[in-house]
Length: 288
Image 1 (cartoon, rainbow, N blue to C red):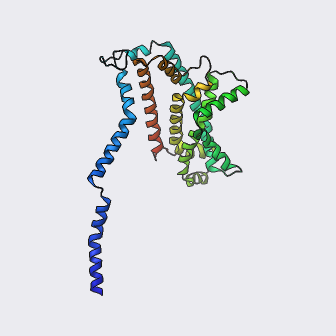
Image 2: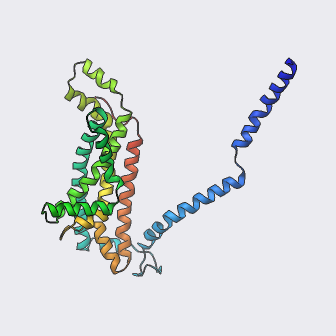
């Protein structure tokens, strides 16, 4: 019995790892199919963007025919006063919305992550609402609110609308940073004689700063790219870059439209990459 058990044990020990390795290792055709599927997905997503970027350097005014390489369309953007005005409006709206929503969103994240109060679950659900509901519903709600408040649609209404739906993004990003925060650091600072204000600015704020900056960059990107909500609440003289691009596309897609879209895409990608790097960084804050 012992010898049989030993034999069976040795056989199972000899063959079990090999069988597990065979099961864990996929067949070549499976890996090839997975790679092909991934390539097709990336081509489907990014090929139109690549075409847009390439044809922004086309000499011809017609985007369907390639006639040669040129950078004249980018130079002509500086001469287009409508685009310059739209860029200024977009930067003003994005900067104002970023500053306000970062402050309010950070305070909301601290309150939701640190304290218990009546109605916290309902408040938490409402915090996610601007992200969940469709943008067209958000735009219609905002323009209705401004109508009831008898506010004329200007660039200020665009800023208020952007702040309203951007606060949630900052709150969620900062709250995720707070989830891994070591509260013992604050307790140690207070044990050493630091007050609540000094502890916040010298311990808490530096450690959550990567999350705050990541949220701010994300909000700036969302604000500068927004079209749907802005189209509801923008008045005369408050045309942003996405609205200007759409008005140009209605006339016809030209390399100038491709050029301004490429620049906007570049800014968006850089902002998103920077936000992700900061959000994933674990040692971004330093205690002074």
